[in-house]
Length: 188
Image (cartoon, rainbow, N blue to C red; front, side, top):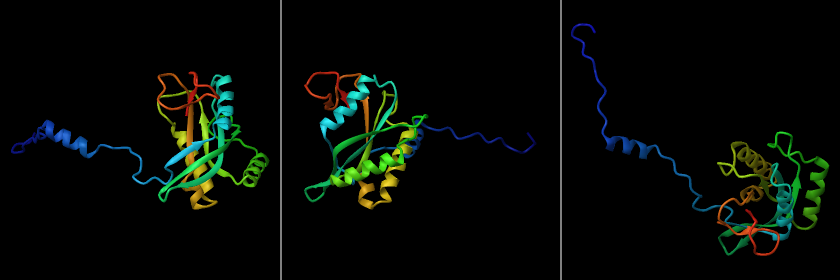
């Protein structure tokens, strides 16, 4: 060093400083205080039929289905979704895109409209992994929600995503196992 210059050492940091900095930069994920969709009710027979196919296949490959139903109000402030039908759609070769033929999509929407239903969400069935939804699945959910939003704000506000995985641990949620109260059901 040159004469007369001083080498400046960084200030020693205290544990309290590090804890305060960590707290200031922490991220908390939580549900919104006033969600647009407060509940989801699923018709057990149609959902069980879809899950039975997945279970018989051993969840060997991801499967996707569109959910058709209604947005309903329960009381003055509780809005939710009642799912009345589950329609499986093929996944693309990369398992990250839906490959529903346009003609089949039009027929499914027309039938749903005839029954007074509309597309209210989608369901993904696959083996469990470390995260609930992968980044690609979150992007697909956002894309589907945006597509439904083009048809109206209410359609997008209560568009739901359900994830079905085979149960590996003690049951935490009500199981849909296609009848009976025994084990072996799939978590929803």
